[in-house]
Structures are given as structure tokens and as C-alpha cells.
Image (cartoon, rainbow, N blue to C red; front, side, top):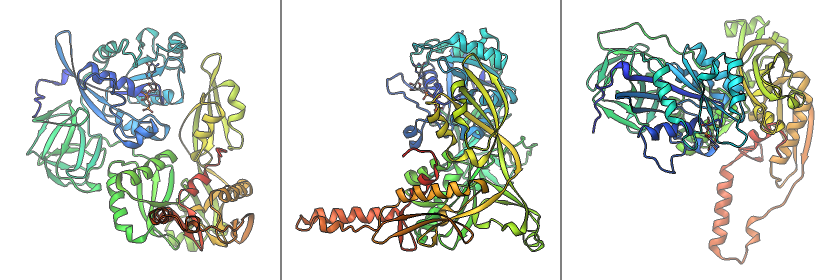
Length: 603
Ligand SMILES: Nc1nc2c(ncn2[C@@H]2O[C@H](COP(=O)(O)OP(=O)(O)OP(=O)(O)O)[C@@H](O)[C@H]2O)c(=O)[nH]1
């Protein structure tokens, strides 16, 4: 049955987001808002209703934004409050800014115990730059150690928001949550919005999440994509509650979805503007496009799976426009792709989704940041038709002799930490301090310039464990700087492991080579022969470990045992083999490499 949305004129509409540092209670507050407005029934099971993906539930983080429309009556008037959800982890700040562009205001949730953290600061500035109304919400006031007064002072000092504008709540217990809704109505201006997301449905094709700037839209309308100029007939429109709820029409100011027979990745570009056929409009300014920070090769374990993997990648990237995809191939791994991600967590989540939602197993190479080289060789310049190239694949690393300078990407990192951890946190990361500011007596905000490759793989995890979870981190792009780079190969019995070829800073080659060899020795199971694990720069071996031979006969163990048990064991072994990758004659568990690359001592 379709809802009638015509009773919600623009004046009654508020589009807002909740932004918060990880775990400060964004999802819990969203659950309470959905309950109070009757969008979902009040039960004890409403835990993070908006976190729909399996990986999100397992990891306890929000990865993919979900949205919902809340109907709310206050003092005799009916309101339509569109809650645009945003993810919380540092890797996804692009998604945050994307969600924010569909809003006119935000709830900035801050934990009453932890106070302002790195992502609180980063998110605040995203909202501030987008000129949104900002309502500070101090959450978890029920906690024994809650100190809302201190947090309000921080907010006033850092963000220049008067203390009396903060709302103190307990999202968990529901205290003052109603007040939050009233603030939303009071403080957030009703306005227009825009196209902000798209998801892929196996049966219905592309579902574009749209926000209407003006006009109205309904089934049967013909719309044109400003980006591709393709024309579509609208099959369905509706709102998100948070599942798709069809409506007769969508009106200016409303956020909802549209299905119009778009089938391909390229047809539903986020940031695109749709207009009515023969009534072209000036396209809305596109969003700041996502900039991948980490690249990795992805290959089918078995080349016969190439086409299946290709279609899985196409569908998954349609749901996640921040992943970039280029075709690639390698002698050792065959035909595949080079993918760009926002960060390592983003890459792991993407892999996990490929496995869980598409049942695909893939080989993933060591992540690399986008390096650059200024070429000096006339031959190479001619070949590339330019003098400065970007290197996202170690296999294409140009030799020192044909390069006048290598460049590496840098980021400006913001760390919020209790002061006693400052010393421990930064050792060995080639960081340059830029700024330091005390938030209160105990905690500081530090700004450092980091080479991106120093933080991309494991800095976030290392920081958390070094500071017993107290420090937090966020970063932004800070351009390129010259760097002394080399390419290092890892060899197993003389055969290069393509997944582990890396570009690294010269000063770190020996230590990293030694470390990778040691970790690999632990990660590779012993086999029937001895295995030499080596790190090499060109032809020069810089580190070596030896893995001793081992005899193992799985079947022998249960000779005389019953046959089904033996079959089971053989089957399990065969399944285990699928998770292995053969390099020369050496079998390596496919997940070994990613584990090896995390240099943090989590053994
Ligand atoms: N005591 C207390 N705990 C709360 C409150 N609000 C949230 N929590 C708890 O804090 C933890 C994190 O809450 P979430 O709502 O998942 O946090 P989040 O900000 O959505 O996290 P991300 O989805 O990763 O961004 C959960 O264990 C909640 O139960 C509160 O008001 N009081």
C-alpha cells in the first residue's frame, strides 16, 4: 500500500544526519529516534536497526549509510524528519561528507565520558564547512564516569558553540531523546536536497537514493541523467523506512528512492542530477569525489572464475562508489583488477562482502599507496606520454636510473590522546609534528604530517593498543613529498610472491624485509621440503629465513578408522587447499599475506 506524501510540504521537512566518533552512540540514538516516532516498534531487539550489512553487525561499525524517514507530530503540526545515516570509522569520512550534502543540519553526538575525539573534530569541520546547523548531543549521561559539564566546556572551547545549546541525553535509556527531536525542528532549516546514494538490488536493478531539490516525481515520469544523458522511465518511487516503502509521488524537499530500470554501474553515478525529459536543468554541483588512498591487486583464485568475479565486482562497486576499478594482469596471477580503497579497513570490508554476499574467494596483493615518479628517461616519457606518472602497482615501479625523483603521498593526521601516551605513539613513523593543543588538563590534540604509507596499514590498530584504546585518530590528504623509494620482492624458494612485492622507503628496507620474512615463516605451514623465505631488492638478497621440512600424512592417522570419518577428513583437507595459493611448489594460506603485512605485534 502506498503512502501519500503530499501532506508534507517543504516547510515541514527536516533533513539531518547524526555524526559521532566511533562508539559514541550514533546507532543507539538512531534506534531511539526511530522508536519515539513510531517508525519501528519499541522492543528490546532494536539494536542498530540501520546497520543492515552483515559485516557491520559482526564488526560493530557502520560502513554503509542507511537512511530513514521519521514522521513526528509536535504541538499540532506534522513533520517529516529525514534521518540520513553516516558511517563512523575514519576510513569512511568521504561517505560522511556525501551524506552531509543531503542535509541541512546534524546531531553531533559526543560521549559524556570520553569527550571530544579525533572524529568528533573531523566530523564537526565537515558539517561546519557544509554550513549545516550543528546540535551538540552529549550522550551516555547515565554512565558512572559521565562528566557532561567538562564535555560541554570542550565543545564551547573548540567549536565555539554556546553551552546552553547542548542537549544531555542517554540514548541507551531514552532520557531526553524527545528533546533532540524538538531541537531538530527548531534549529534545522527546512530546505531542498539532492541525489546522494545508490544501491544495487539483484531483482530490481539500481535503486537510486534521491533528494529532490524542486518539483515532484512519480511512476511513469521520464527522467534523464545529466551525466550520461540516458533516458529512463520511472518504475517506482518511495521513501526509506529504512526499507523501501513505495509512495505515489516524491515532492521537493523529500528524501527517498527511485527505480528506473538502470542496470549498469555507470548509469547511477552518485552526485549525478536527474531531470525530467525535455526539461533540462543546470546539474547540481557534484560531490567531492572519493579519493582512493590504498590500492591492491585482486585476482580470481582460479581463472575460470574470472567472469563471475567480474560481475560480483561490478555489483559491489555499484553499492560502493568510492572503490575504483582498473583492469590489470600479472604473469603469476593472471587476469584481474587493481582496486583503489579509502583505507585498509575499507579494503578488508570489501573483501569480506565479496566472500559473504557473493561467495567469491580472491587473491589480494599487498596494499600500496599511490606513489609518483618524475621520469628522466626519454624513452619512458615517450611511452607514458608524460614526465610524471602515478604508480599504483609495484610491478610498474620504474628503475632508479630512469627517474629523477620519486614522490610519496602525505597526510595531515590529527591525534587526540591523553598526554602520557604521546611518546609511545609515534616512534618509527617518519612523522613531523605540526601543531599541539590542549583540550583540557589531560588530553591533547596533536597534528602530524605523515607519509601515507606509514599509517595506512596498521597505524589505527597500533594506536589503539598502545594507548589502551584512549587515543583516537583521523587524517586528511596533504599532498606529495620527495622520497627515497625502492621496490622490494619477497621470494619463496626463489619464486617471487607477487602479492607481497612492495614499494618502500629505502631506510626501512632491511628492517621490513627481515620482519616480513620472520612473519611469513610463522604464517606458512611446514611442507614436505625446506623453504627459503627471502627479501630481495633487485638481485640482492637482504633477508632470509628458512622453514624446515615436515612430514604429514593425514590419512595415515585414521587408517582402520571408519570410512566416513576418513572421507570427511579428506574433504576438509580439499577445502583447506582451496584456501591455499601455490607459489612455485610452496602452498601458502591465502589470508597469510594480509596478516603478515600488519606489522603490529599482535602475535
Ligand atoms: N551507558 C550507555 N551506553 C550507551 C549509550 N548510548 C550508546 N551506548 C553504548 O555504546 C556503544 C556504542 O554505541 P553505538 O550506538 O553502536 O555507537 P555508534 O556511534 O553507532 O558506533 P558506529 O556505528 O561504529 O559509528 C554500545 O555498546 C551502546 O550500547 C548511553 O546513552 N549510555
